[in-house]
Every structure is written in structure tokens, then in C-alpha cells.
Length: 523
Image 1 (cartoon, rainbow, N blue to C red):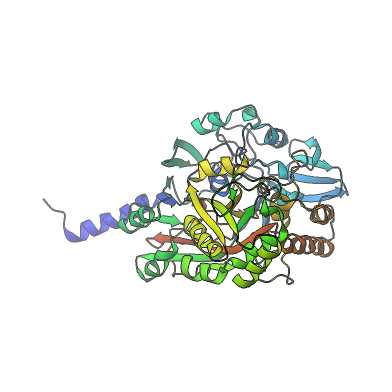
Image 2 (cartoon, helix red, strand yellow):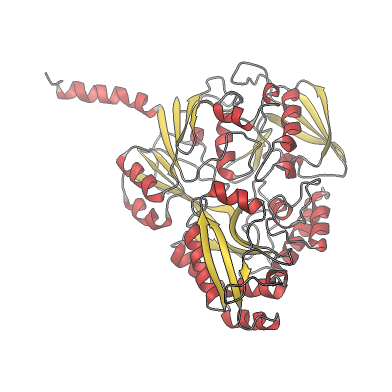
């Protein structure tokens, strides 16, 4: 017998909070591991933030805020002191102390087979001193102003998991953190199921259960949102953004990202594996070592066309490493003007009047429109005589091969993470040095002693005005030497259903606990 109409409505209203307690999010990129020290890549780090904690965190505008540390200060030019948050518990009920910080930082360089390690953020620490269970000091060889920023990048695990393998984290055995959620299940390539950590130091989150669906296919992600299978998606496809904004059931949130999409070139090896003559035969001399050739490639790329046609307006053309609102941005660099004739002239000056052959490798499921961008770049280079093939592949395969230096010419992206330009300089453009943690993502092995020196000066300068000047000058030298070819900054887009709100983040992280079931206007 059907329920009376008013009773049915009342029961539906009472049931809403129960339904609202579960959140399903469609993530736009696969996750390679749950081990938070294995692979320094945003999708992994984003998931790690749900399970684990950092000494220092960043808000949606990339400003530093307290995390597992409540305060920090310089004790002397070579020593930083961090006061740890009292009463924090790991998921297994054990107390968080300075010993866990020591174990976490010591583990960073020991993780085997890391495609992109976190050592750039740990190498500067020469000694860790546990003053008491809730006070730790880091000593460095030289003055180091970026310690708080670096501590936004290293996840703190339980000391009990210090010897755990990457598989131990993936299985859940070692995935014991202090974060807002506990791991229930990780199904590789499919989903990550989480349960609320009611003992979280940051307070109870709105969602009892969270499912992170790994949906790199744009059409699948959007369809699941429209059908109600998902309440949230990240990486809203640029082709769908305008239509989703018109849907009254949805809200779309956007902000300019700190992620630079760029081209990296093999500027180091005398012979490069995917560089040929126009007939497809290997070249005995690598043209990408010549800065004139690199500059020609930059001039051949029509960035406004990529922004307009490929990104459908949801990107900002770039001529440097970070957006203008972040620390270290310089006013002395402009977006490289599209100049195909100038590109041809530079190629002729470099000894390649007829051009040459090249392959651009790219991921096809990592960045917004990544494979399409690579195709557009290839077409533009072909017009100036550089016959360019495109090979796109899943990110898990791509990054391993790129880190192993298997490619000559690559489409990549970099989010500063630290909210300023030293991260980009240190990882992408400093000469590769495993011991110092420099050039960890310098997959073209670009090297410029002046850039190295200026960046090292910045990393040792406490005065912010002087430090920013060093960063700006290093950036100008590296870009003018075409150490990389900047293309654009992504615009981060999220779409939500059912009145769920979100503060869009510059760092593009999708944090389940920051979605609020309290309604709000479209953005």
C-alpha cells in the first residue's frame, strides 16, 4: 500500500542527511601508488592528503597554514624548529610524535624505483634533533628559507611503517596516517574507498564514506556526474565546461592553476633517440643541444591558438614558470610571440635549413587535453620544417620511461607545490644532481651553471626581496636559454551536484573533506 504523500515527503527529507554522508568523486587521473614517498606526482599526493598529514599545509590560495606542526621558527641561521600538534593520533590509535617525523624524512631517499622522488625536499636536512616528543629541529649546511614550504611536500607516516614497501601501502597494511580518512580498499585503476576518521585533529568531516573513482576518460566522468553516480568531478573537460555551467543541477568552480604545461627537450646528449633527418634516419648530432634550435621550436608554437582551440579558453598562455600572482614571477618575460618565419631563420642559422625529424612523447590521461596539445604542437612544428610524430601513452608508462631518459622531446606539466618558483627551478632546470636533490624532474638534462648558481643563492637567502630577485633572474636566464618551452597554465575546474560547494584550489588538489553539503551559487 503506498505511503501517504506527506509522510513520503517527510521520510525523504529525513533520509537526506544519510545520503549526504556519502560522497563519490570522479578523479581525472590514475594513481600509481598509495605509498606517499614513492612518486612525486599530484594525483598520488592528492590521495595521500586524505590518509596522511604534513607538518605544514597550504590553503586554496597556496598560502602556508599549520598542519601537524602548529608553529615554526628559525633558531639560528642553520636551524629551524617546529612545534608539533598535541594530541594527534594515527589511525591505529598510536600517538604522533617527533619520532614519526624523523622516520618519514629518513625514508624519503630509500624508496626503491621512484619515478620522481621527494629528495628535493629532504636533501637540505643534514641533521634532525628531537628536542622533546613534540619539538623537532632541522639543521642545514647553509641558511635555508624554504623549510616550511618544503614541509608541505613530505608526508608524515607512522614510524612503525618506516620499513614498509610500496606494496604494503597499496595493500593497506602500512597506510596508517593521521589524515581525515582511513583506507578501506584500493582497487588499482578503479577506485579508492575511504572511511571518515572520527579522531581527526582537524575535526569531523562532512562525509562518512568517500569513494574516489579513477576515471581518466573525460566522457565517462561527465556522464557519471550527469547521471548522479558521482557528486563531484575534477578536471572538467574544457569541451564540456560551458554546457555544464548552464545545467541548473550543477555548480562549476574554477581558478587559475599553478600547473605549467611545457615542453622539455633532450639538450644534453650528443645523439638523441628520437631525432632523425627528414628521411627518418638517425642524426649523428643532436640539434636540440643548440639553443637556436630550441628557440626556433618555441617560436613555432602558437600558444594563443592552443589556448583558444585546444583548451577552449580554459588556460592562460605563459612565458615563465609560475603565474604572475606567485612568489618569484618576473615581469621581464613575455609569452613568446608566434613567429614561424623567425623559427625557420633560426633553424637555418643552426645548420638545419631543411629542418629535421622529431617525435614528441606525451601522456594521454594526465593533463587536460594532453594528447591534443601534443598533436597541435606537432602540426605547428611541421610547418617550419620539423616533421614531428606524436606518441601518446598512459601516464604510468609515460613517466617511468621519461624518467629513464627514453625520450627526446616531451610534453609535461609541473605544479610548484611550494607556491613559488624555486620548486620549478630546482626540479626542472637545475643540473641533475642526485646527491643534492637537484633536477629530479629535469628529464631533458638541461644544464646552465649560472641558473644553478642563482637558484642556489635563492635557496640560501632568507631576505625575501633578495631571494625573489635571485629566483626571477634564474628564471629569466633559463627561459631565454630555452631550458624548457612554457606553453600555458591550466585552469582548474570542478563540477558538483546537489548544492555541494568547494573552494577551488590553485594547486588543483581535490580534497574530499573540503566539499560542503550546504548549497551555494555557481562559480
